[in-house]
Image (cartoon, rainbow, N blue to C red):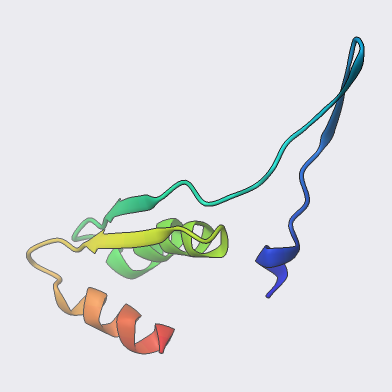
Length: 75
């Protein structure tokens, strides 16, 4: 997808050029509240997954089915 084609930036410095490399950081934790759980969880999930990170989603105890529904949508 498009996230695989993200490019770093070149930063001019004295004596050469530095550049940034975009790579996954690891695991991202997303804690979704009971009010507005699906959009808030998606706001955390989408950028983390697009960057290649793994995501651990912890839904509120009162809305556990939102995590299952997001998993169904991801498949």
